[in-house]
Image: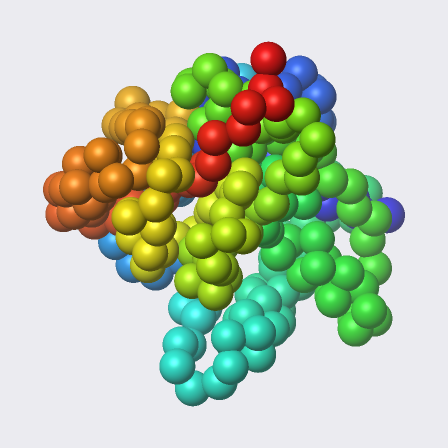
Length: 257
């Protein structure tokens, strides 16, 4: 039976791959590289190929690049939009597994960060199997996330004594009150939702293009550095055509050692 691996490759730097990920990659027959539409998407494709070239011997594997549908925005509620888009993408993946894998081969998708955190590939594979048209085994190989890299680069722990850690998105952060922001990790924030808290006594640890040569880091009181962050976000997006940032909003905690 064919087997499909979801391999977490971290946020960009090939050095962030785990030994398990590298060993798994070395037994893959065909890598499926999914390409999105839009500015910057060629960069993600290039980074994945760079990972393969770094750790694998040329000629020992095949690469199949496939274009996935663009998510249609605005016509349906957000959750429904994501559901439809994932089903359409799952159909592409199902076609790759059926048509591009020989019997008994191992295939792989290189997943940005980690397959279990804000990524839909696990649900897509489960959706394909539930449909019953094709059958295969699958396994997820964990990867280092942008959250871990952000904390390491700013030299801070994610956990604090006696507190919870909230991981959310910019879309959901817009619903938070100031009192709810104690130790919040924010991903996927195209809204710059942190602007809502610029008049508070909250610290921010911000990073963009983490794990790449274009990495940018800023930290400090949000009210003191917010203009710098907004300026850098604008300049970086104008230069590269895309921007992926992660940050932590954190209120002072006297319990910390």
